[in-house]
Image (cartoon, rainbow over all chains, first blue to last red; front, side, top):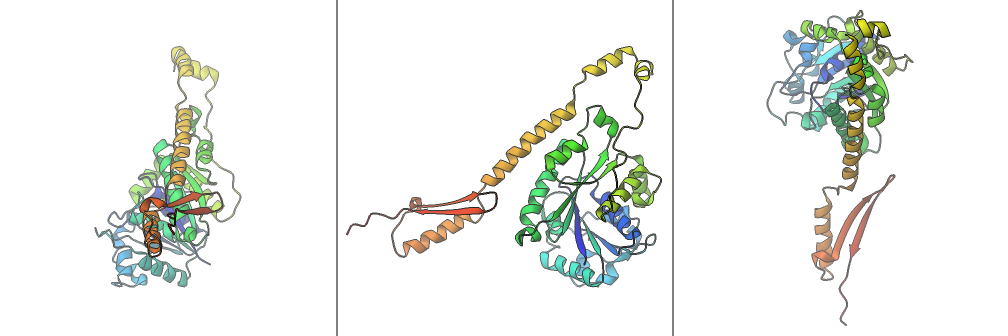
Length: 269
Length: 88
């Protein structure tokens, strides 16, 4: 059985593509045949984050239009076995994606034996975002501890629950909350929404918390999904999240402030 | 961080709590609005029902009332048609 998982958020810049790249790489590293599809038609970026930008020949829209086969368009990752990337098209045609085309590509991937198909959604609630979530069995909602991101996550949850194929057929999309750019220090200082606050507001079960970390930018600079950096906290937090997704029971890490400043240090430090 | 800033820090407002309160109010409000919102097909549905009824009885537009009420488990489509008094 293959599963289609959408990585979505409503708001832009919260870490959808970073999370899609890390999540898909993690699933593949765990031995599962995984494809990750960039749905951001016109603003392709997953290829860059995955470091395969120079290997793009055909794209998602080419496959839908029958201009190339799926095999020709899929880019096989050179670092991780079992990982394939389907890049978005750079066309400015907003109607390039349609339900029938997307469904046929997803079905072909399923026939090819892909266990997990990760759909990297564009920001917003327009066609691209709708197409990315429509066929989803499960959804990862990427949220930053910040008011506008939480509000937009609530909006996208509403769309998942009312307009997805699952919703139309009376099923539910299994939802997971992924909090990114989390700063335990700022939470403890009262400047940032805590993970508990966000869970309470959105009422979606938590699958992971990724700490704010410089290594995320370093990883995207070099085109390596951050999950490959096993030394970094962000990479480890992503791997924990992948393991939880696969059913392992793993406690949260990096959600508490590291060193408590003592009274004297606060006073004189 | 010196003595002064240590005491200053105590007075600092907890903006995270403020954010949480604002979000809870906003989201509750948005959810309430959404559930009150009528489905897109309602005007067209009303129009077509009116046409069918007019084949048999003459009713004006204001005599037909179509309403959708959202419940927790199911939605109710309410149809209220006031027929004119028969003169015979």
